[in-house]
Length: 343
Image 1 (cartoon, rainbow, N blue to C red):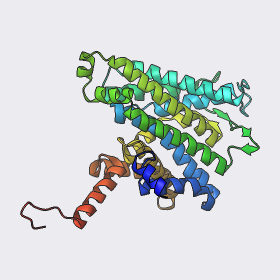
Image 2: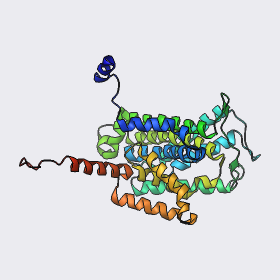
Image 3: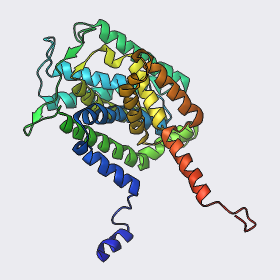
Image 4: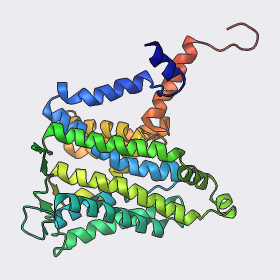
C-alpha cells in the first residue's frame, strides 16, 4: 500500500475525482441492475445521441463553428450501411462485409463533413448556421425524393449489426457496451485532442482568427480538418444509430431531429466534452416519459421550453448550472473573509 501511495504521489497514477470514479462504475455495472428497456432505449440511445452531439461540441466548443449538419453526416453513414451492406427491403444492398461497410461509411461521412466545412468555414456566426442548416435540409429532401439509391420515403429496414464471438450485438446489453466503448473512446480523444497542438491552435483560431492568420497559420485548413475529425465521430455514431433503429429513412435525418442535436449539445453544456451525454440523457428521458404527462404532439413544446430555460438561466448548460450551485453551496459553507478578519 505504501508503494502504491508513493507511485500515486509521484504522478505515475492519475488522480481520479471520486465523482468520476462513481460515474465510471455506474456505467460499467448499469446493465446488471437495469431492465432491458432502460439498458437499450435509455442507456444505449443516450450514448449514441451523445456521441453525435459530441462531434458538434468539438466544432462549436473548441472551434467556434456551430454546425447543424452533424446528424446529416451521421445519416449518410447510416444510409451507406444499408446500401453497401445488407437490408431487408430488396433494393440495393450490395452485400459487402460488415467491417468493410462500416469503415467505408465512416470514411465517406468524414469526407462529406470536410466538404461541408470547405463550404462553410469562410463564414461565421449565423451564416455558418444557415449554410449547414441548408445542407441538412437539402440532404433530407434529396434522400426522400431519390428512389434509385436511397429508396425514397420508405428508406431501408433490416440493417442490423453482425453476430461476432457468438454474440448478437443488437441485444440490449452487448449493444450498450458497444455504444459505451465508442462514446468513451471519442470522449477521451476529444479531451486529449483539446490539449494537443492542433487542439490549442483550433481554440486560438476560435478566439482570434485574424491574429492566427497573421502569424502564419492556415486558418481555413485547420477548420476543414476539424470538420473531418468531427465527421469521424458523427459517422461512427451514425453506424450505431442505424444498428440501434434497425432502419434508416428520411425521417431519421429530418429537420426536427437535426435541431435536436443542437438542443442536446446546448442543454448539456457546449464547452464540456461530457455535456452532450448529459444533454442526451435528459433529452431521452423526456422523450420517453414526457408522454405520460402531456400529449405526444406537444413534446417539441416541452423540449423548446427546457431549451429556453437553460439558455436563459445557464448559458453553459446543465453542467454550468450544477457548477454554479456547487459554488454557492461552497461559499455558504465556507464564507470568505471581507478583509477585516470578520467572516
